Length: 103
Length: 196
Image (cartoon, rainbow over all chains, first blue to last red; front, side, top):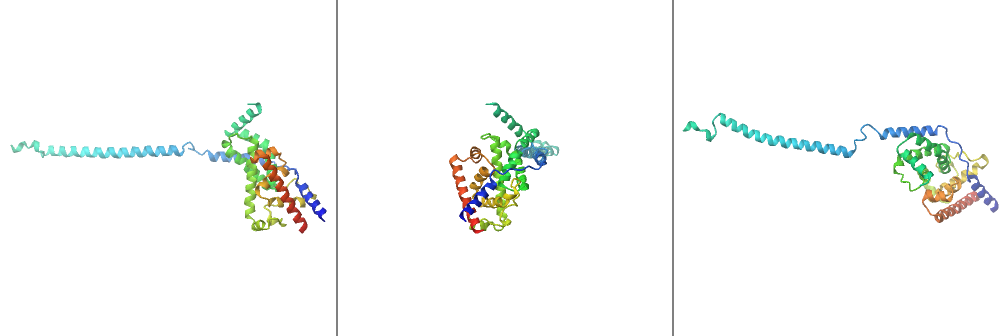
């Protein structure tokens, strides 16, 4: 009985020793190349060059421009308001330096 | 640098550049070999072809990371072995009674539900089919490192040198693991034939 078991075990090892691998599906290569082509398309969409670093740089520049524009606009509005008031005062002789009528 | 390594370097450069003709050549050179490795781990022709496909897609995705610390062939076989083990792990985990195998470690389950795929290895001849099925099931119960080395050595027919390069283990480690795998399989098969 022990001999039989030993023989069965040996047969089992022999059954898988250096098995022939068999032929592949003839369309295997075509399928793989098709998938590779699809992967290439997916990894190169339009604007793929526009990477996150460029995106952050663009955003920073736009923000800086906006902040600069707002600051410039607010400082200009102060200057023009003052000069408008002076002009108004001159027109209607409201400035103390131009009160010649009281003399 | 000799001619062969220069040619391989040029070939790798073309692969990294995504050259279609280079990929076509790669498939011509390696598809049968990769399939051979996959079907050694996964003795089902259709599953082995699916995994072999995934190997080449992984080669395409990862070729830019290939740093030439090994030969291209070694790197490809490494990917193949890893993809096969990953496939087996996932399939084994899905089997409802997988936990029973870990409890009754020495038993080889008889019915198909306990193996991760239907065994239809194209190289198994009819008179050996039953014995081959039994031993494939036994191999599936081995720890992963024993499964890997036993399969590469005894089913895929890889040399010790190739196994050392693929696994990154030393010769003594490979020999020791192979010895333990064979001993373990002998024990499992003896128990099985004693009880059946």
